[in-house]
Image 1 (spheres, rainbow, N blue to C red):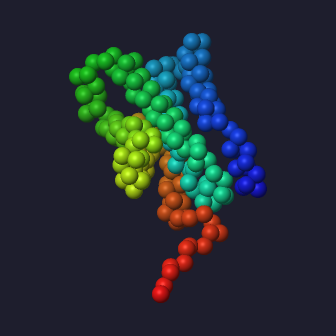
Image 2: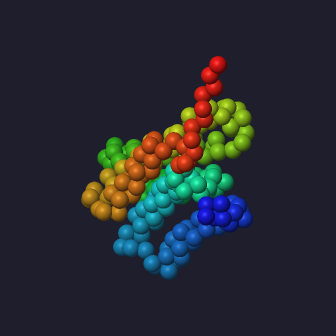
Length: 208
């Protein structure tokens, strides 16, 4: 079954993932133009962009556990998923700087001190920026495979910081963000507990 699914997945071009990922942004633009946002439209825009970034980051994180458990491979889409997550995160930050802060940098600093959860969000964004600018073959060659993998482990603290940023920003223990945090913890645990595809025996150590 996994081979059949992987066969279908190989026929899907990577650009189709980008096209599908544009749907949440298109819906947001539509709601903005038609008055479909909530009573606080600026906050609604910021939150929807931030949530979408986190969802795509979780999808990126889920690629490896999915492959190890089901043998279904989405590896060829992982780079695109990560870059899409960063794109939405950049739009989230840009909307906060432009629409809420009005490019008033002093006000931004005051806001960060006043609302410490912004530090969590900013830290996650800086990590995602580092991952985005090195998500190319040239960076892999320059850093070396091992160094590149170490750098891209930043995705783990980044996804946790982004999730905590969301929960803290709401100031309420809402069910949805807590479930999302639980999903993230499960995915991280699976990466530790299942280190190779299920059913594959570890390579034997050659002895003389």
